[in-house]
Image (cartoon, rainbow, N blue to C red; front, top):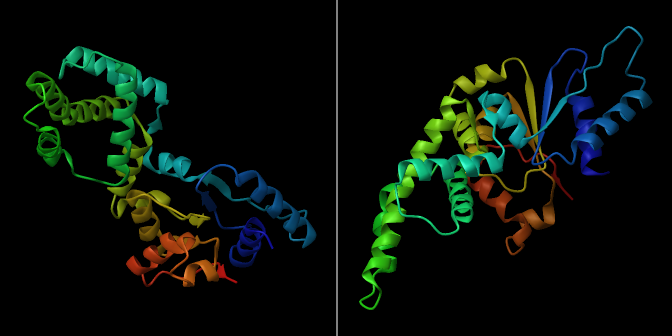
Amino acid sequence: MSFISKIAHYIIDNYDLTKESLIVVFPNKRAALNLRSELSQIIIENNIQQPTTNIWLPQILSIQEAMTSWSKVQMIDNIDLIYELINIINIEGLSNVENNLFGIASQMLKDFDEIDQYAEKLFNHINDVKQLEMWTPDLNKEVESSYIKFFTSLHGYYKLLRNKLSQNNCGYYGMISRKVYEYGDELINIIGNKKVIFAGFNAMTKTEEDVIVRLVESKKAVLLWDIDKYYFEDKSQEAGLFAREFFDKHPKMVHNFIED
């Protein structure tokens, strides 16, 4: 039985689709159409749908769509983000970045996104680290000074960009998932009476993992894996590394769908 088919049968067996509002969250969008089709087929085959009964198919989202929905913040297009950051650089003049500004802004946004998704606090140390990396008695001091000045300015870019995006109620994915991560108990109220299934994750960022674990522990969600016992139980198998580390951190989590 395919993973999508197993999820569909799990939904039919464990949820009352005539009453319960269900959200299924995948790592990406590709599985959504297949799950809808599989669920519809099972409902028809089992004669679940009666003329006087409404069956509510689950809302099927990617993790980015789910986080965006819960954050109530609009996801901004990457090109628009880059030009927003370039505009900040030009207006503020926080450093003397001139060459390949588009490429530099693009890389900075990738770094900002990763910093937020992993809830890191690294700006306090980055200047010291870069000074140690750059120091050499033979290097042109003007080049070294310019390089250090740029890294010193990164925190300023980061804060200005986040403030500007927050004022317009929009953001990049890392910023959005960081907001949901920081909700605390408020997240349970946002989910309301809905139930959530997280399915098929073989990797998560820190913010995603924290949100998923909180919802599972509060009985608002379940986490369904797509893992073979062989790869999970044999510690020499790299394919099971993420799941093993996950359960080491969260030993009370149920091992759903880890089978032979």
